[in-house]
Image (cartoon, rainbow, N blue to C red; front, top):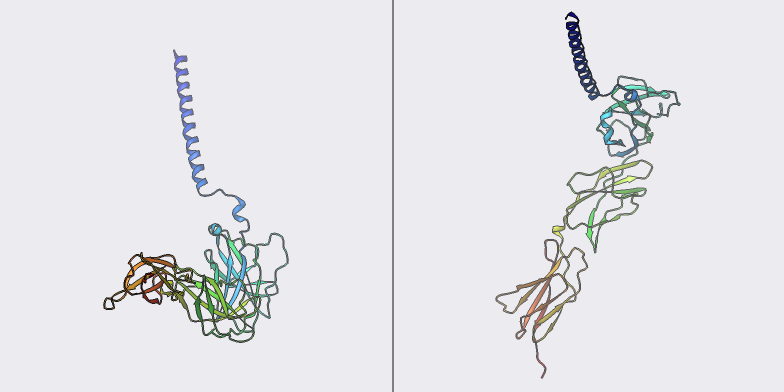
Length: 355
């Protein structure tokens, strides 16, 4: 009997132990999963972050505008950027000699030492892609580069180095005008002197412009042709610039607003009328403007009543079914996006039967 009790107690002990094992294993898995949500402790977080690329500089009026590229999906992996500036000619920002496991310049406060001289260090947020430097002198040389810093403080390799020597900006371009042509828009302005090129800026918002002009190369002349969009109001400005690897741009011209709703077509040319017993066939030349959407036709029989609208047509022809037994006059206008042009007119149209 005692042996039976011992076996039963031993069996209960084993069942209880196995139950405790299952609970502990479950808690271990829960703990491991919660730790995994915080991020696995690997050496990846201590690797060098991706560097910024394509650093460029533009001198515009009283500022040097620097811009660079960095992938949007990598922003959360870095604290931000360090823009490094060297003041020439004492301390050019030369690329450092290769060194094993280099983690970037040693920094102290707002300045650091790199290469052979002192370098200013400017910290920028990880969402920034540009910086405006207003601390410079015309005629002096400056060197810039930019690096990124990850969440563990590790610095990336260097971006490309930009060298800039700001020159005196050119004057404001004058006489800025536009002309709507067949299927395009031509901008013109006055020449501001030898050695000055021009950049054209375009926007669909008044007063808000990109730093990049729409022309792919600096413009040597005093005109620029752009495509025409009759469905949207567009704004333009131009800036003079001095030639060179780095742009030295002056103040902008006045802003031009190109509003298609204000376009007024020219008067239809070559209006003719052929009177028959059945009615009057009107024909004219097609409007040269691609943004003309149709034509409107008016007729006057009674002088006191004046001209009366009788129809609209998308083509340069219209047939009036009113029999021309009495004299009448016709007017035809071209219709722009929202406005009519000046009317073309033909008078004393009447059918005269042969005898």
